[in-house]
Length: 391
Image (tube, rainbow, N blue to C red):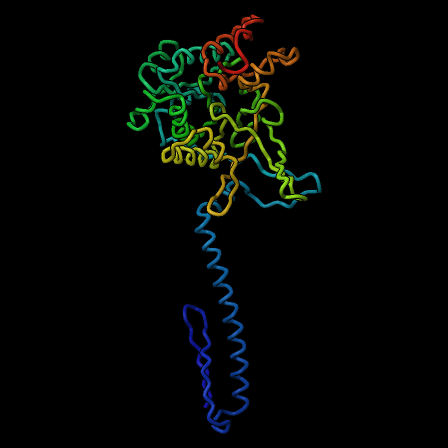
């Protein structure tokens, strides 16, 4: 007796290989046996194909679950598929599309931005009473440079009244205990960390933001000097071409003999106190990542900002796919470049920066005033009393 069982489960045919054969005489005719054999082969092949499809679909489902909304992000970013052009003509996409503005996020802020922003972009600075004097130098020179699209986010009532009395565009958020306490009494670093939470609403509303600390002197309109081709465009803490724009740093380990030299890539960090950020999905993801980590870790916001921007994907970590650009270090100048290099070089001292960020020196206010005297008032010896570094 010969028996071949076919079972259908969820559109997959499983072959039950049960065959009893007491004697060939008791079996059906050879033609019938051959027919069953051919059917068995056909069904086996079909079964194998269906199993393969199940494996592929399972893997695709796993990847979809793992990536979550990555497919949608890629579709929004890449759009229509295209063929590669001739050798040397191909350029990758670095300018991500902006999000659809969501006015429901904060209608009050939205109305302010409609009045203040120019071409849907503006300078935003956060301030509390601790930095009142620097804030005055900050907005005075913004006005002098002819910049109208700027906004102070007041972290306390004193700054709110101070800005209103000086005809400075100002916005104070609705009360939120966790934010307000830091805003009122927080240190520079603590207040700096707030910006990643606060900026999210600006981006959701569809505005590009030039985030600015208040220890910055504006000498020209920065919007005339931006590329706007990346998610994040930031000034550097670097002090020369290598440190600002990156270099190949060779590590020497003599014990390795022939392989003693290991090449590494280095770049000095972006300054989280002055960067232009476009309203894109990667930009908002960056703000979320940094704000989340700062709420859980005792960390410096600038370190976290750079780690999220630069660390690549690796086992256990999905890197951020945000495009970035380093600003010209002589146009968007940090105070180390100014006091250590520029003022001591006859040619470089003739340049007029767009902004100067007094980020390398703790005596910020007197240096800001001296910078104004040097570049605005033409006082050639205004910078001389200050050392290259700090005492």
